[in-house]
Picture 1 (cartoon, rainbow, N blue to C red):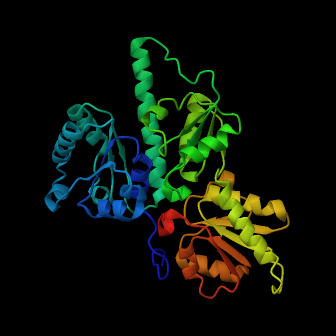
Picture 2: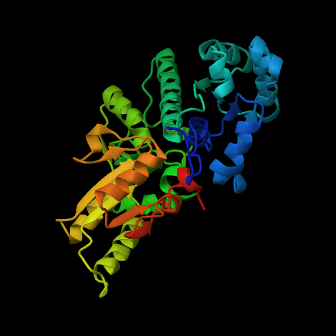
Picture 3: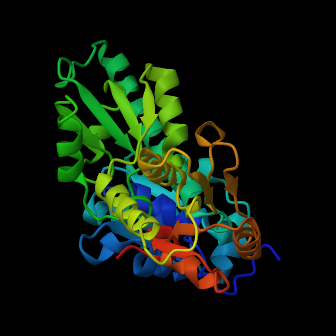
Length: 370
């Protein structure tokens, strides 16, 4: 049964990813639910909620609101919120309820923009997909909205805006949310990392830099994608603005720690055989980085990367795979004879009969961000 989980907890859904992707940009985020989805997002999937606040609201849908599709009430609530607290934009995030009743998001956006006098975007989440799909749609919709408005303003003024980074090498970091990078703050860490590579300006979109940075997204020299959810946005920016991109998980301490633990396993005096078959299960970009690090010390290692989340074909090696079900994952690990598994501690719960070594590599969308 595809959705049956006996050992694992449910993974973060698409609406959680969408909210996380938009969390720090200074907008009003409205989750189209009766309150339950919002509680789960703020209580479990978005750890920044406990340290820094964002204008995240539940639409407070009631039975008759959902049945009759009373979009005007939602728009009026959004207008009142905008009048009271302001906001740089508004985002309407879908959940299972609007998905079931086939809510017309484009109409909602048009109505809300007329009433609220601010940019409004929608992310059509359904609650049946996983966090990275929702985050990916939110990234793309936000950047398209802001860059589109910027282009329109420039055309109306008949002037070309001059960037303050025109002569300074700049890099944009795409895909930064706690569920993918396991951190609540990254700005200082990433600035040091990329300035050492010669970049004078480092835009940490969504974790350190806000909506003003998005306005410069068409001007950077290169984008770095740290999680597969941001690949559609990177490809859009490459197509529209000619900005090249590469994938990198720029947190070397994670790879160094795992490589050290793996080295200790291989050098253990009581081991009976070589630990030469490894499974890494995480988000794809991070898993690839761990694989690269392990191969530096032993190029002959057989390393497979797998994930329950997005797996981009361009980033796959032969043998890499996507898991659909918990039992599929368990059977694969046991049948393929892996010596070492690297992944979130939650996955270890499912591998009760696994006799090899397990190295923990936390993934916030699986067990939460500490």
